[in-house]
Length: 178
Image (cartoon, rainbow, N blue to C red; front, side):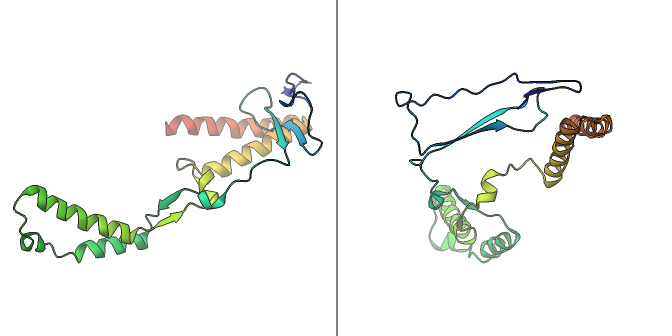
C-alpha cells in the first residue's frame, strides 16, 4: 500500500522488515499482520505490525489501577461525614499541643475520606481516556480523519476542499485554546 500520498501522486516510501529473534525461524503458529494507519499527522501514513503469538501473555484485568471516584454522591457523603464529626472532642482528648490537635483532625478527615471515596477498579474505557481530550474534540478529530481517508481514496478535489476546511478550522481552534 502507498505510504506517501499527495494530491497528485502516491508512492511506497516506508517498509516494514521483520526477523524473528529465535535464530531467524518463525513459529508457524505466529500470525503477522502489517498495514498502514490512516492519519493526517504527517505526509506519510504510519506503518504498523501486529505479531500475534500463541505464547503471548494476556493482560490481567484483575490488576487494573485502583482509583477513588469524586462523584457528586461521594462528595455529598464526605461533606455530611465531616459535618457530623464532633470537633469538641479535640479538647475532650486533652490535646495539649497543636501537633496532637492536628493529628486528631487529620485522622478524622482521613477516615471520612476513605469511607466516602472507596477504591474501585478503573474501567477499561477510562484507562485509555485522557482528561484533556473532550468528547467534542474526539468527534471532531474522528470526522476530520474520515474526511481525510475519503479524500485520499477518491482523489476528488471537492473531498480535498472539504477536508482542508475542517483541518484549517481545527488548527485555528487549537491555537485559540492554547
